[in-house]
Image 1 (cartoon, rainbow, N blue to C red):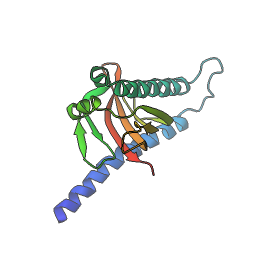
Image 2: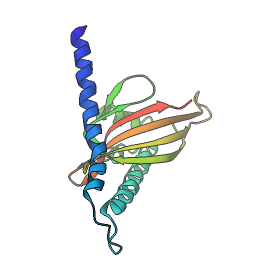
Image 3: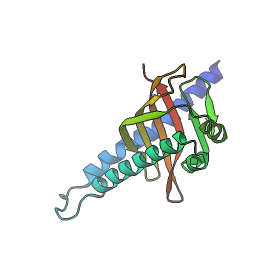
Image 4: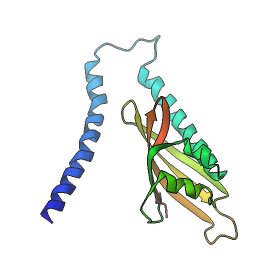
Length: 171
């Protein structure tokens, strides 16, 4: 029991420390900059942030479109090799191959994605959150479903890919 408590404590610390470090970096950078920004050149942050938001939102939308079309190969292009997903059905973690098998059995007929937020976590990682509302066929026992989604995206060889997917049902 004591060993498990120690393991949990170490796990929590390992997860919290990088978040604290990332949270402090922008504040330190702001304090270090004493000269006013140039009027002629925009800040790198002001141009990089919107570009990343637009890029990842477009990738998320394209991935959903591939899933809806049951295009397993197109959907696979958005996922890292070590991709893991946790859906709101309570069946636990799913590896990439399992999720790709689910693509062929996609049941939703339409969907809406909204409330996108992108949080950069360094140069090669970003956390994307949004809400999805899905509609299912009239013959289905489930007609409508809303989930809140969190995804970890990473840049591999210059391409952004989804590494983790977590959904929570909205009631």
